[in-house]
Length: 576
Image (tube, rainbow, N blue to C red; front, side):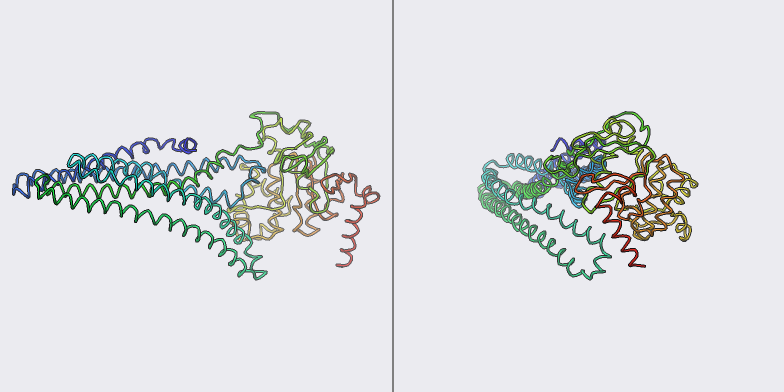
């Protein structure tokens, strides 16, 4: 795990190495200062020597200035190194997420990925800064202070050595109890982010059903759990301070008692006693900081593990680095079966045999849960078939480079997603180099040009995240236009005209027939009218193909199609 995270330092190695180097310089200066101060007291103040006072006073000022300079430089390099490390960490995580297949994404919730990219990275960033600064400063301060204390008086310093095992045992016990709590907290953070995300995305539904109080209660429940866990952790950590102070102040009382006796006995000077007390305070601060470091590392250990889960996740789908171009829009399923869990005992699609010629219009209907969407998601390799073979353009989809295959397939999903930006920005997701004329043509085909021109800024109108400032039908038409700009060989519409009226739906289909006759068009729909004129209609039921034929053939022979058709015809007649 450490090796994996260390790989994210990269161009910030220089700053990472200079930080502890300057920190050591600061520590050396700080441990010299009490020694010089003892000389100033013993040889200057006690003896009334102005020369010694000036001499050691100047040395003290120089040591303080050097300590300040080293500290500033160390802090500056540490800030750059930690921020750069976090930047690279987020980059590597986000880059790997972009490589994930749908099955990889299914293993992590959206809220969990967001928590790992934000809260967890911040925790690891803080721990990294602690490691290169405080984790160097505290041990070095402890070692140098003990050495300097030994040079002054061995007998008194042995008191300090005697209390170190007690401090180590107390710290180990606290960390062992705290770690499981932090591990639980971050899993709860995922739930909290999920609640917030779900509420914000569905805020219109929440208000429409007057469920604000229910949502607040749900949020408070998760938030309260985090509060209780953190409170428990903080209560355990709180024992750290008293344990440290009990030990170190006990040591200082012992130093004062022994020091006073030695001064009276003439075996220790006043300056040496002052120095020992100063070193005792430095050792106290070093031990306190070490304990905080261990707590921070305990907290970061959980976050680091969660980050590495993202970094270590290998995409389930890997295409070839190079491969053939997609020749045409023909599609062939050969005895295809599919399971989301790659388990033949949990099959979603089974025994699919289907041939679609290039340029055909194919309709797919079926009840909810009949795996219509699952079927078409296999075509651009959003998932891999579990068994059998799937051919596009006469070749197995696994022979293509993934980008080449997906560039040849445009898919408008059930959930129409628009991104924050102008309408032009959203359309250019289909083709970054599309001209204005091409965008207008695509929007005309998708029956979107009319409403776009009625907007105040036309094609430069700003779209809010998720397309919340346009209607569902407008959002669907913009997504269809975006898909058309790819100039695909295969166009898949997954219930993508459900929010438009039947007249607009008919105009979109007519535009497809007239302007993109060579493109294979697959239309998943609930309305029979949307697929009635298709070259072939596929009827699906329970993950299988129940029947394939034209509208007339299915109306004469297939019960599922008949029921769907007559229920819609009667429903239409009643509504009229």
